[in-house]
Image: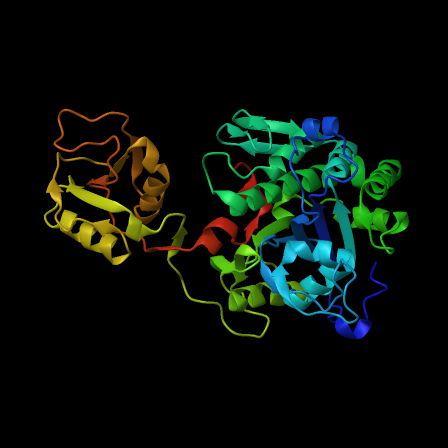
Length: 442
């Protein structure tokens, strides 16, 4: 698979090992009954539906996983178009997932290598059916959800709590995009894919699977039987990789998504695409090439020696400018309500500028309606001592409506100690580097 890629076109090898994991959306070979069982009706594009760049550290003590959004708009490596027309190679950009259709795994690998500067040592690709078989062969994957998950598109139906997913339910889980809460769309889907992988790998690595030669050989055979892999990923190599993963726990795994500068970049012929944040993405892949952790310590430096940024505001999932806030002062201290109003406005919230008096209270409370939970959580990030109070109906003792009212009401209590600055950053909030421990329950 890599034999057709000229060596001079490839990035230099670095410490550690890099594997590109791909999930294809092809329906080729599936009967209608199989499509119905897998809940994958409709036409596929024979594209890469999932892409993860996996880095195994040289010291065998860390696994770093970077999700590559499938709609990333990137230059393809020079190639001949799949219809065979033309006598020479063409150069164009497109959604990176379509590189698989335009030139198969070699073009996808070349394009990802060019975009990231990271040399890919191995490649493994599963389609829907082979993914189900592989997860079954691995013994399933543990996941945890804080709320019920339902998605008609993928067929997912999970109650709140912990679950061990077999291959079929695992497929529905990693394909879900519309569960009705949490991070929406592909960003949320990629976080769930990372959560799924953390459970699958740490579960295997923490059991006897990677220390029992017989079981390890069975797992290697399951991969070979289900995946399309490069010529170097033979059974002995797969066994070696399994041995390298032995003992890896959730805390030894870290996950990130490529930072995005434009989440809705329209391109004729390609529709809505994603443009990478070249600076932030470059720093991310610099760390992969240098075999450095993605989750940085406070005194960590960039690979080029520069100091990391100073203490930054905490990222939130909702733009504070879109959140109207009415402050009520129940602190018992003169001027505290006005101070809280000014501080919240300074960090971006749309406060009224006119605090209202309230009954004295020890604790700070944020009241919100059912549709404003995400906004309320963003506000609570700025007020660490605050607790949330869901109001289902209007309170006759108050002179403002609650249900359907977009304004959040903050009752500042005696425990008020100031406002923590926040910023709206989808990349950090939805795809920033985290350990597997932090993805323990989504």
